[in-house]
Length: 188
Image (cartoon, rainbow, N blue to C red):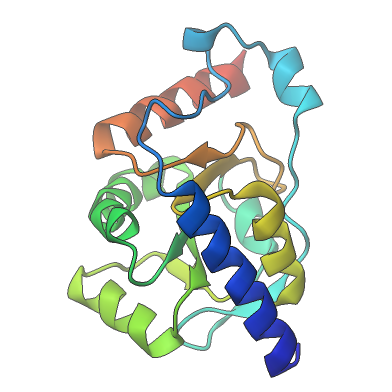
């Protein structure tokens, strides 16, 4: 991707974030039993993360194969410099630490900001789960599904969504409830 097109996409994303703002937890319903949605709803609203083979922030190669090692992955789309994004990173780290042995993973996709700044933010908060920098294809996907940052998805071992996009910051308790509800749906 050329610098001009990357700049163009970044400007569009930033404008979207500014216009929509970061939403609170009541701003978007997700597919779970509490709002009456069923497994059929999940099947009709499936979002699939496009194939990728990218570097994480430490230059390790990461591909869609990372999903196959876990029954559930929380994919968090975030931006450097966004306070709501920064506030939920420690909650995501706690979930990752507590649940990775139960076949639940957390992955971050950095949708805005410089790589060095992202590394600083992650190191300051002792974040150890994988964070990747999107290419043009993955960035286009982000623009389609994420009206604001942070936005999260719960995906299965093939990268198919099990929830609608979860827009806005969440607490650890809220993420835990979403994960537990999604696991119950998977196991039905």
